[in-house]
Image (tube, rainbow, N blue to C red):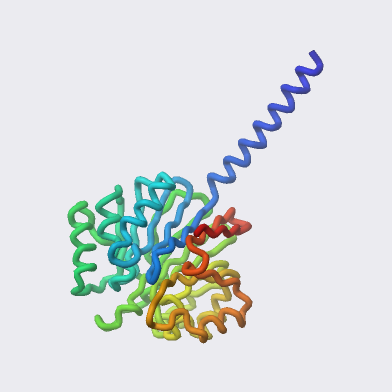
Length: 279
């Protein structure tokens, strides 16, 4: 009888411990930098919510949908198109067509490319309206200790200056912070810095695939990321440039590249961050 009591107490303690661990895991935030070659696509998972930033280039939509389905993602609470460049918006039409999408955010700038037109058509077909992504706008979340706020574009730029229109999203999860910069260049970075919108961060999605027109010294030194992610593939632009790589090295950021590491997955408990790569 005494042994049964001891066994019962042991099982009870184990179940309580398991329950605590499960509850803690439910509050974790996961950020997946999906390898789409020369382009961007990022999935943020906060509890039961899923937010997708960009959809890679044309033809990458099916790869992204396949990746999401493996994670049992059927609904996207929000889709963010950072700006109309084809290597960011190209796969979004297929993603939006294929999944249940609750909201779409994009900066208020248009483009005449077929990729962008297809994106607009997919949004219209789902009877959704695009919410403007700009400084101060938040993506609502029910996740504990979590906020998602756009810190750029700070202002309007010329219609040909698409990169600086990039929607820059700041994710805060308790004590951990992620910054997703799209293709924002030095002009946008200066505007964010002037408005004191750039905090020190744990993880930085390096702007414009590591181009030297982004990730200025002032911006990098202010953000001071512990981890940096460069979403890049085979290209003729010299991305990532040695200039940007040196700047990241100078602040001792641990840098990951999708072309070398494949999919890069960060898990935040709010107090710690774990990194996993999957080729």
